[in-house]
Length: 240
Image (cartoon, rainbow, N blue to C red):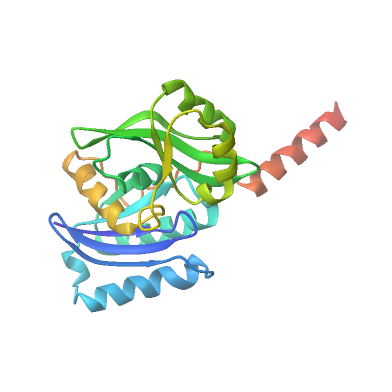
């Protein structure tokens, strides 16, 4: 079985091709370019490098969210287009699960944090039990202090990773009351290779969907949607 995995949920753009036993190719870029500029050229490059016939791909894996609204839409549209064109199923992998899976095998609690702006983070708490990734708390959008307080209540050592670490590192240091570390640079961001590995786990469990069914998981309204809702509420109050 071969999985083509895509990740454009955050600052990183990443594409990978993996069989059940081998990561055949992975192309990851974390630079100042938009995903609309990078994702398809990266996909074309790794397909060419491994001489892959796209008909050989069994499923398309995509980080389903949360994350950047624009990035998620680009990734989702790309995955849906490929799935429809190839007649292949979509494996939607929650972004924070994929981040946590970077630290496969650790005995520490894992806390991925992605910047959600307005002093909030997309986060959750995870652990491995017999090499199975377990949710301690599901992914959510909360104030950084809320997840730190939650970690303190567990009394457990924790590893932080994700693009929110650079922004929230000082806040974490000032409030955390348990042992903690930050994941090393080669493990601390999204990687399509990890998405592909977790997608194989999902596939065996039958957690797949059709390309037409797939929708990103946003967790929050976009800024434009929030501003529209606020404007409508103000207009409603004026009329009242």
